[in-house]
Length: 282
Image (cartoon, rainbow, N blue to C red; front, side):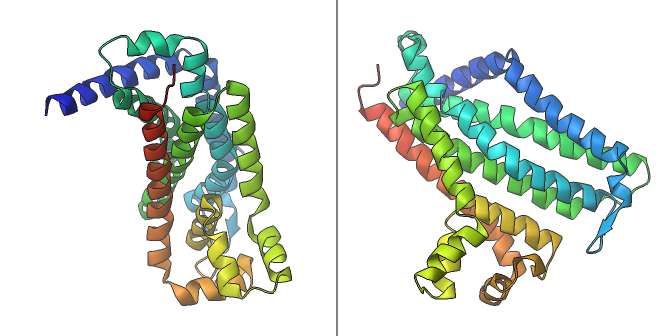
């Protein structure tokens, strides 16, 4: 019991310290202004007045926002987070922090929690700001889509955060951590939809195996979930849509798209924390 309280106390201390450090970072404010400014630009260009496959108003804006988030958020989380643990080790900050009454797990999960908050909150505020402004200007606010999109964003950030913290814990230098994160990002992007399917169909694998392997990629899961909410028939995915929608219902797929990235991020986070606690990390 005492050990658990010690870990929780350490987690809160490290989280608060890391949040304060992020608030002093130019990267954080650039990132926050980027998303807030993007929403403002979309309103000013009249995107809420356009229509595509029945989506108009704020629904149209949210769809575009999610597509942009899929491009920016994963690489931002990877590049900024992989330096968390290894960077502190190289700068000797970790040696100082662990000389204080701070547990290893509290240190690791404190940084994890702080990074999740400072990454998710600006995106959520930008999306919420769009909904509030839309409601103020008498636009129809799709609160169900807002809730699902917020959950998808949170799960994607959590997933890539867990992967990033694992890379940071096992890497021996910041350069290696950043290089690994960038290569991972390229692989995930390369194996989206057509490239993966073209490669695997060339090996004459059945469609179920091809699509099943594709759904291991959290980026593909996020993209497909956004498309399912945008286009319930998944017409933009062609023949793959028949297999996906015949295998699971739309509701079950959205649930999978939220739960799977969270479990994947938690698994990588657990491995990262285990490595951090059991290896000589100083």
